[in-house]
Length: 190
Image (tube, rainbow, N blue to C red; front, top):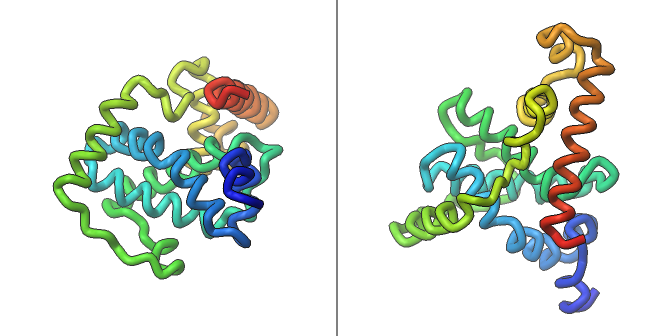
């Protein structure tokens, strides 16, 4: 795959090829880093925490690239789901998970004041970009998607809490993710 072909490749193709071609993951990273940083900054309100979560998210994505299944949705949604899980864990633990970065041998990077300013600029510039894409889903779909995807809860657990069947929960998650997938494809110009 040449440089031009790599640039034109879909996110799914980049994730598929990154094991053999590190530049493929680099392109995937460059495509999504600003949107992910902006999303994490909006969720945390702290540039340094957003940067740590972003780094761990991409490290985890690199480790798990072979697990990505394009049949289940766009790669960007998969990336944001990874970030959402790390975000929830970081709030629960009071610190950012760093296991994936350590396993990959990625050193912690000290952020300069300019780095932090740049993250703030990115977040401000993308403040109108609904990175999570679930904010305006119908409430029952949003609740089911967040519980299943972000909180990684089982369908049975969600169904018990909502007092509905697992089939209803599965339908809500499926419909919500279909809407998110369609919005992402629209934004990517497909």
